[in-house]
Amino acid sequence: MTTGIGPKLARPVAAKHQRLVLVVIALVVLVGAGLLASYALRSQASYFYLPADIAAKPPEQGRAVRLGGMVEKGSISHEADGVTVHFVVGDGKAKVPVKFKGITPDLFVENSGVVAEGRMEGATFVADNLLAKHDEKYVPREMQQMTKDQAKQLVAETK
Image: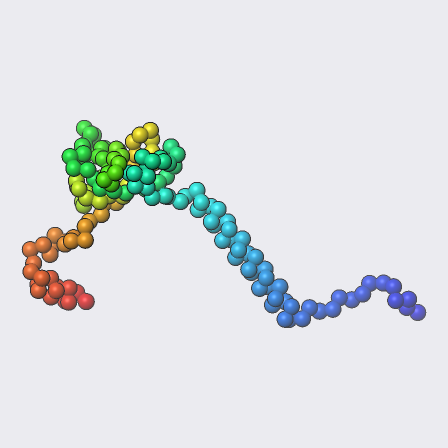
């Protein structure tokens, strides 16, 4: 004699519901991973500043930023150690003194564009890395003596 009281057997879950549960779990995991990655990269973001931006509202001391502008004429000087370089980056509105210890790129010259990655230490920007930019009229050294026709032929041969 059964009273109807007692454990009931669980019904098997339909395959459609299993797929739905797996999709929901996968979405939750993906969103969680994205949020975790964005939180981890938040402190690694490097903001870009022009000299006028730094003059108006300087970044906090020690924060990783990028400084972009033109290397001022006559501002490049080297220390006796041979690897420390001091120069000034300007944008026509403001100027920022920069200190860099390392080997400068070949295109790093006065009146050229530069992006310095580093941080502010006092009133000086201390760069860890320099990226020299060339103007839109840049021609590789190997092609400077060529005529336009010779250059076009060389480009066609390399395709």
